[in-house]
Length: 319
Image 1: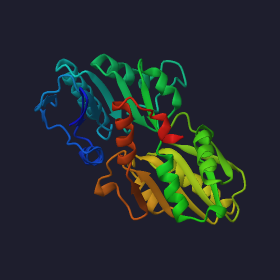
Image 2 (image 1 turned 60 degrees about the vertical axis):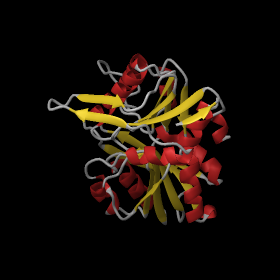
Image 3 (image 1 turned 30 degrees about the vertical axis):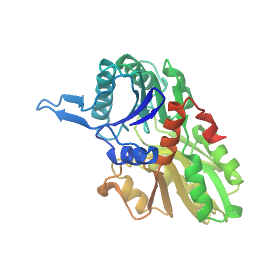
Image 4 (image 1 turned 90 degrees about the horizontal axis):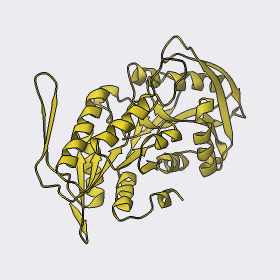
């Protein structure tokens, strides 16, 4: 608990990633509010805070990790409990927002589930949202209230810049949709940019066909950048395409290490030298692998929370 004048900052954590919440709390110099959680025999979730939250500036941290639907439901119930307990302002902190990839309709009769997520949080009682590297910027417009969009790029890029020879790096976007992200990387590292043109199989989920590399990669260290790594198929095929074009080394970097299904084995057995992610999602031992490096976003989230609490500027963190 942290107070400024009459304001009181309180940080709450769901059960999906308590380690991250504890790191954030330590950065802020406060404790995570003790909370009772129960999951009943029929899988319903119960939440009760063990301290008064009346009049507080509440920040509710829950990353939407596997099982995603349970993580989201628990998050919504936590917000509802705060609203009914008279918290003054409620900020939903989602280092990884579930359903963010369903941000538009590709074909008829499809949902826009990312919009549904933001509507649910608003209905539950959230006044504000904070997220790290949303799948697309347009999701910020789905929530009817302020959205703080944080970027892990400085954390990831500074690590890469400290490990590799900057004069030898080419930043690579694994598809056209990540070009803007890759461009930011290239600007920060002062490196050239390359793009991989790919086409997904519309009838098979998570199946990608890589086509051609646009840009100079021969003899260079290629840094493949993306917002998330799910099954790893995109990155492995992109790396193969880069090596076919003469790349000397390939490193992959992404904010969110989802690492579903065969990802760990697939990436470990690939020609990618190192896979760099943040701790926006917990990575259990069975999904970890030797080539994996995980960096903490706790200082970033803590600074953003502090700026919001003191009515400062979150944007200033990235200028």
